Amino acid sequence: MKFTAEIQIIPLPEIFEPQGQTVLRHLEKLQIKGVNQMRIGKFVALELVAENESAAQETVEQICQKLLAHPLIETYNFQLNVMEDTIIEAPIAAAEEEVITDTSATFTSNSNEEE
Image (tube, rainbow, N blue to C red; front, side, top):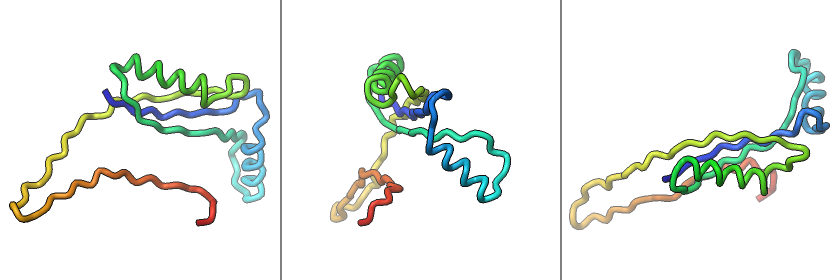
């Protein structure tokens, strides 16, 4: 079975989080009111293959515990979704026409690096 996981990693409430504090100060300078606290974390999206939902959940737990989240300063949660197996039927083409199936995926980066 195929699954997707959306993982959120946030600093623990008792840990000072400078990015959130910086954004909070700038909100005040921009006269945006009503925001009392801000914490900035990480978001990870992944696809995986596992025999069942329980095995997929265990894999994501291991990824979070062993690699993504630092247990002393961060907490995490995730949502696991089953991917539907979809069959894409190619259009019926005349014998002389070539059918090309594009299976590439497009990802967008918000990187600030110059190209």
